[in-house]
Image (cartoon, rainbow, N blue to C red; front, side, top):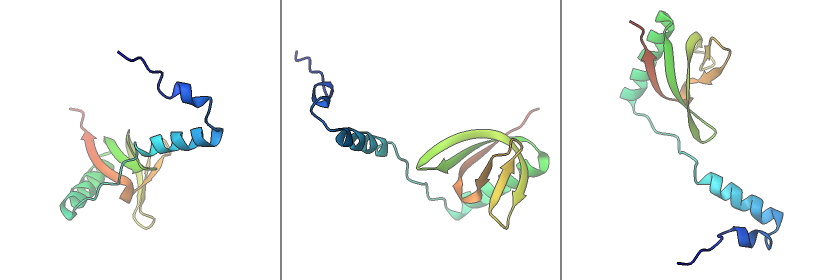
Amino acid sequence: MIRDRGNIKWNAMMLPEHVKLLREWKAQDEYVKKPELDEWTLQELSEQLQRAYTQKTEVELKVWEEKQIYKTTGVIHKLNTQSGKFYLEDGRSFSFQSIVDISLNLIE
């Protein structure tokens, strides 16, 4: 069995610019394309967002930002339809277009 050191043995011969480009190239492989949502899904997201705001329940959001999908939780404090943003109680803000999924954390 051949035991190769992989990229370690080549790093000494690479310029720092090459190493930087290779790291950026590897990071681009992890990028996620923004999901395209249909009308029905957008309507459902809008209804859940309104329900969470009026009931002041905690929500779990999947938000697409900077070519990644993040999960975050919080209680919606304010909806601003003119700017297309909503604000959580801890001060974070997100645009409506960045939402991929919403789930309500109902406590019974």
